[in-house]
Image (cartoon, rainbow, N blue to C red; front, side, top):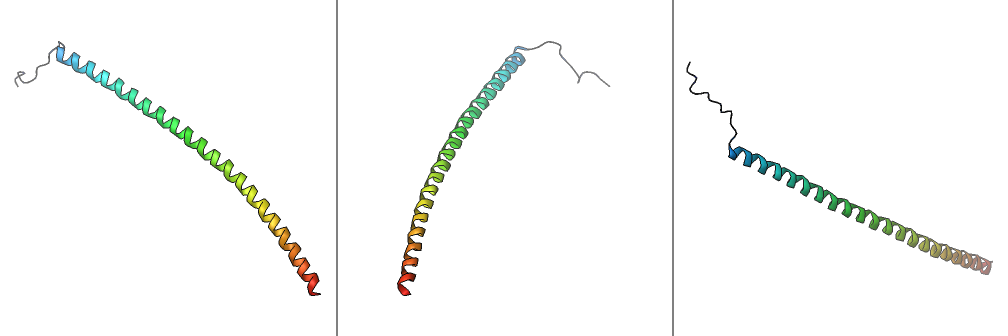
Length: 89
């Protein structure tokens, strides 16, 4: 078997060094961009949570106002029914 087909060089070429440095730089750029996108998404989520909380508080306040109006109407209807029943006697 001839050993001519298998040849390993022990030296490192400038092309390998440049390629390795470029890959490392691209890796750091990718990680930085990913962290930036996560930070933006986190800010958006916090903003949405705050909006939803404000909406829930506003809805609760409106519900209380509606219930007060319903109670007043119910009281008035009860008075009218009682008055109508007294007149029918």
